[in-house]
Image (tube, rainbow over all chains, first blue to last red; front, side, top):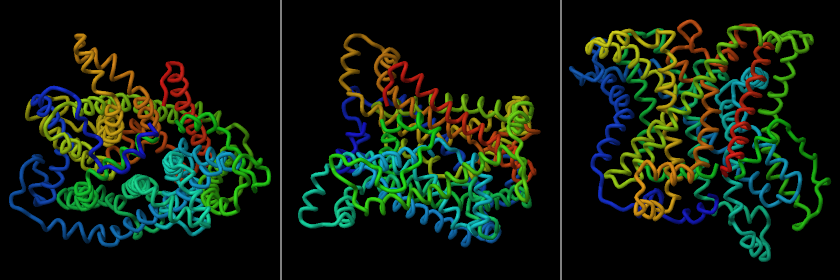
Length: 295
Length: 313
């Protein structure tokens, strides 16, 4: 499993998932069956889109699959204001970006030190120490975490980003160190003979080689942070500083029957990642696959 | 692989040596100071934000702390009380049952889809792209969308075709609400498992299938004798990660039922969070500690069982 990654790294992303050698011709029944299965993914998304463009009257008529008639884009303006979309969207972007940056910085540096000095107990134990948290679910430490962030003034988006990065650390160190083990030491040793410092070796040689894994770790960190509800809903004490998934809960209470506005808001929350994903689909899938296989 | 080393050591947290002096000199000599500069920041923030909160939480589980003010030791009294608490027992029963059902449902569907996508079909890349979409959307938002479908669309459809039992929202039915949570959790987690299986299937040489079909093996026989044994490691990792995720189920329940009707779909995570508002802080910390131990035990158990069956990661 580990050995496949470096070989794949240079190839076009996504391509390696194609399997050329299964004989026979195109199976149309299977294609149709899978297309029908894909409706289970598409139908909820379709309902979200149509509901968002309906009027409040049509949104309660019970037929969720009907096309909007009349077409009513006004729900978006209302949803935009109710969720203070620019603010919550901006906070979500900030939290996710900071999570990705912190995760990449801490885990790449730590993994490099761990792999290069694996023969030393301190580095070996540190690996086990960091990885142990893979089996620590957030609910277990949630209550103390709420107290800790309140005490240290981190009961805000900054604290959320730090904690997201912490919960990403074990998985990221695992991915980076598995990948780093496949990079031959000789590569750095020749640079060292030319007088490069450890920092230069890391920055100029290791980091560029880590490219594909940086993408993988970054994608996982981004998705985990961007889509999370549990942690920000616990940690952020000021409701005006909430992230995008959490502000969606206003539609559960105050605006119970304005389904069109609620769905317009859900659509605005879902669309950014879906659009980016569809554009960079091959690349994202190959990134995720590398991460999944390595774990 | 590397993951196999974790569970056995997960329960005891080794104290890292304060500096490199205890490390023995080996092949590549003493680490340069900069190696510690690389590693120590990660260890430090991890200790402050994860390990210390965990230890503090375990400590308070032996006290009568209510979240503020003073406290005194209770010994194991919180743990004893947990055993006799019907609400807690129900939450564990629900969470474990939910995790087992969902992991089976999600793995069967994910593997079926992955095998389907690996055959000669049209639009394989496009279909795969669609199947992965749930992975990039927020669980709570998806749960809100499904909540509408379960409480409005499905009943309307059921009464139109005359399926009376489903003409009421299943979210309001204490016996059926858990099904909705299984459906949405599986919907969200199938893509991840699907990609792992796709990678696993790609690693199987195609000529194995050709040779076996020359010997007259049908698709089912091929699946049992070639596919399943060769991707057993992928099944294992998916199951372990899946169960761990499902045990912590929270977002989906908040979006669908809020733990109701009554407490019918209240997960362990939800009971723990109740400790922050309910005033039984220390009691819920004991609950959290038990939950952690159970999570680790289940993962270790799965690894031990798989070792016994010679499945290698």
